[in-house]
Image (cartoon, rainbow, N blue to C red; front, side):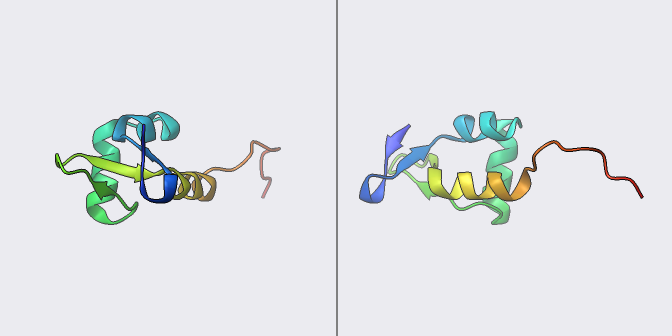
Length: 70
């Protein structure tokens, strides 16, 4: 984890992958497809804004509730 613009935490692909329980390569594919924004470090590594990651995570997850009956 590093600090980005205005002190916001920047997460590595591995850290993001752990939050979503996916492979880090999946996170990289999401970034390439524009599904999640990323920042490139001077060394060419991707970093992700924590606030954006948390927003996407909250959009894609739901609380476990009673099964929906149709």
